[in-house]
Amino acid sequence: QSALTQPASVSGSPGQSITISCTGTSSDVGSYNLVSWYQQHPGKAPKLMISEVNKRPSGISNRFSGSKSGNTASLTISGLQAEDEADYYCCSYAGSSTYVFGTGTEVTVL
Amino acid sequence: QVRLQESGPGLVKPSQTLSLTCSVSGGSITNGIYYWNWIRQPAGKGLEWIGRIYVRGTTNFNASLKSRVTISIDTSKNQFSLNLSSVTAADTAVYYCARQPISTTGPEFDYWGQGALVTVSS
Image 1 (cartoon, rainbow over the protein chains, first blue to last red):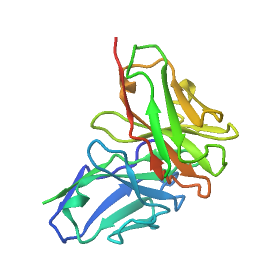
Image 2: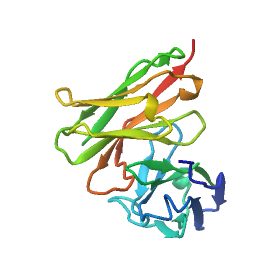
Image 3: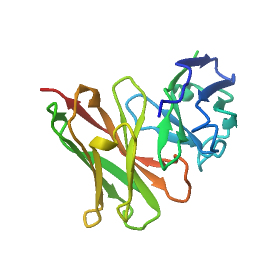
Image 4: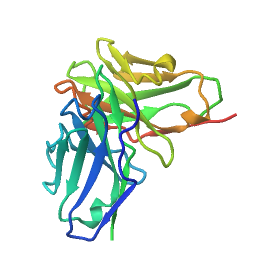
């Protein structure tokens, strides 16, 4: 199980939209619509933002959306706000009741 | 409101066993509708799923750690625990416990502990 590949950093200005990619293989991302995204502020525990590729848990802003094509999942943040500055991790089901996280992406709001 | 809290030694010597406990409050660990997970994060690095346990004792592990990991559950104390044997400096990390509804197969960790830093050093 190798970590899913994410860009190390993505940045955008307030109000803009950014997209974070998460590339896996046909054994994980490509085989299951079971990708979640987590937001992590410094020194804090991760917070679930998206589940099952594109579902938002209760209380999560609709500025966050998810999608998937082939072996790559994506998280889009629209109307970027200062509070969105954080690290973001994808996580996929990898079969046999196991999970694999992405390498993480640092989002900077310029 | 559900709350998870990790506890255990913050310093472990190389080759010894790392032991952490996650105490769950605000809900019963025995209600059978959640898996209970361990996830770790080395300083400045990404998250790594370690494994999980279900109230009936069923466990699943990350293949890369499976030979060294034990996860157990104590329903009388509403706690579950992690043991990681033969530790090295590479096991130094913040260790999180997290809850996962069984209603989905996906990685939906909806409640997390605050994390416990464990350093492996002599």
